[in-house]
Image 1: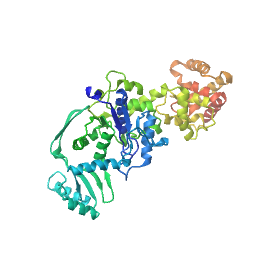
Image 2: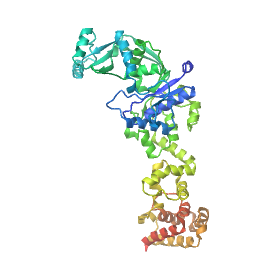
Image 3: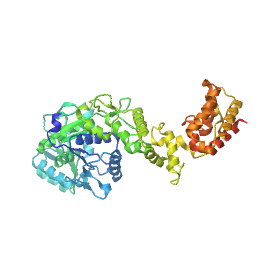
Image 4: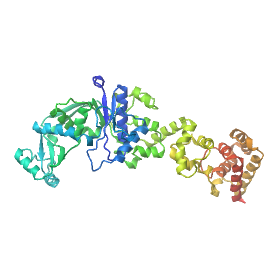
Length: 499
């Protein structure tokens, strides 16, 4: 794509700190990051906090922490959690600290008669729109304040009337080449004289469209890569760029993330905040791999990619136009894959917080012994948060459901006898020989003696006696971890149910 290489690539993620880092925003961050790194460009984190009423420091912190957890590092922007405000030469990187910059451009638009003061109240505007709709007209601003004289404006401001500043939308067609969607065209007769600032005699607050356009110019943004929900904002921003004589950046609008039912992704389709996935025990490499394929594909059969390999492969040519379907089963599959690939001690360390918070272990517990438990379940884990429920029987006494120990067609007497037999066999094994391989050889020989189709008569009651669960790791590795003494105690306790 030649347009991608014409100028120094500078891209930005510009989230509003009005909520936690959403998977949609994280996917946009990833695509910007990959594009920048592939082009030896610069990735910027800019905080768009002009909405002072809804912006909160805790959300800004959540965004920063979420990106860092994912491994998406920025070259310039906000780093306020590290004892300094910014990194880079184009700051400040928070819109709330750039007001003086915006006021300079607002004045320029007013002086060039490309914007005007509007003193219509919200109640008045609402009433007009309701009336227009009642007579079958599309709601629109009637440009009542467009012809106010300088004296009228000065008088209204002096009287303390609140106002907005509206951009004079010229009648024309706006066309741009979207790097994902191709040629996109808008007719401006469908666009009102939109607001670019609001204020009073005391102060003026720039609004979204003006702030974005100025920031992109001042920070020399070359490419704007964002979700397609912003595509209707693009003609307004292009109009402002033209009015201010700014060069136009390249645009690429990514497909929305949809639920399996093709509706916009929401809570009912699963967690949507990156911090929620982290808490549930998804790995950052899982999330990166999963998000990369939400609306992009490099071609070919390969679907497992590290962040480094994604940088090598990424191109906007591979971005789809249609919505990206969020598949929870795929996410779980990928997470299980990456869990299986984790070095055992690293995985153990990752599981520790879940075991500690559940109260199953203390910080002083033997890490080597814990790693054996994790190893037994490494192939079964889909997410780290599952570990306490899977392994709780190692740490606490079991209250048995008698029926759980019953294999197909077995009577109480059958179960008691098979547990007797198992206990007798295990009693003969020395504690130092109580390892998985030895136990498997001895117990499987006994099970085979019952008959190939009836091994469950020995193995099922044994496993249920050890764990108290319908599903678990194999009985031999469990016995090795429990040790001989604890194994024998559990078999005796289970057997007592059938006297």
